Image (cartoon, rainbow, N blue to C red; front, side):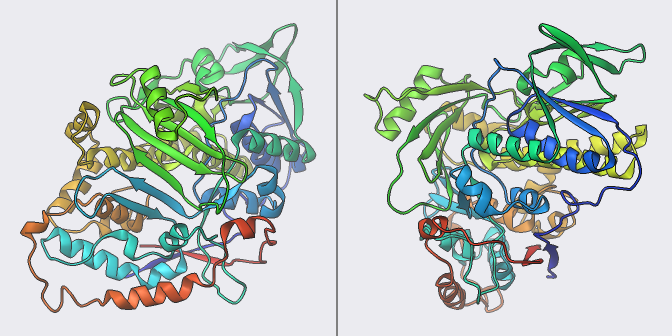
Length: 536
């Protein structure tokens, strides 16, 4: 089996560090409505394309409408966002109480013996030395061979998280981990705001009440409370679920994912943190959904994502408080409702929707900031090319829609493959037949023992996630024949010695520091490309 290597250059990526074209910008004045992480991340990326060429970027946010600000975890792509903008971890992480993230532990999603939990790791160069064994054994296990196929045995990130180590190796050890982050979402928004204003973004605090349309259907101006309208060439909607521009003004249709993903609400509670700081998110299955635990330097972020079809907000809060030992506590809980799905067009006429206004997929895989980043970066590329025509817009919307649907399918798979039977919620998820055709094909290939590495590697199926992610999910949920039905391996089927993997990874973990200790003195970024990410 061949390996496809992608070099991830920390100093410049195509998505966040393209060099703007020379000459005047295709948009003279661009107005972003709404702040928070979505608004200010978008402002930074678009200002990089427009401001050096004489364009104006203005962000208007209401003094009375709060940002939701509950996304406290990221994928590794956030690293590329900061690196592409030349912002050091040593600057932004302490300001946002941020910690490193090696991946996600899933607890209690499977009831199969020996598979009560598994870890979804982030990639490392070292995976190149252990991934063939994992894929080989998982494929053999599906075919009924008695070999070790639990994903936790095979990845360096798993062992780092288990020992609360940081995914930043010592200078003499070149095997970096493509890590994500945990952070205080409110502080992150404030940090991004400061950086955007420093880099030329104008900021106006006003309450936007709506928009007026031109004769051709484009947005002509924003209407403000107690102020004159604001005209612009292009508008960005970062108004959250309200969708003030993309929905209320332009009436863009919305495609719900409710039949695929049942969860539509969450409740959040903080708890103190002391002692060693974990370098993982933990996702634990509860009665009617799942609970997150996210470590920051200042506290734990805790929450419960659930479906209101199966329990009430009060029941969810009570279950979370009981889990955290806070039944008698007066610590206030924060309740949120979620609209899961996407708009049909993220870029419609002279408006781009970014963040919750464009859509949302529940936070199981911490993809909220990734959608913001990739949507804004993709539009910045169009600005750099000077191509805002109909064909560019159609291609852009297709890419973003495929990203949403690929992520949806990956998250749906967690629920579809669960083996819990304790509540109607979990039974209904396992019985759900509302699956996309590509996901049905992928699951069929797996269940038939045909392997999924080739179509996933080619992104014909399983779009948006690499082979190791799909195999970690399917093997971690024990989508295998029952243990009683397994047979002894042949010499070829059992050719890998797992003791060699254990030896390699145990000798490697000694090169990674204690997480809390490293956070106290985050080192500067190493110059140049320092990480190769291997996507099978």
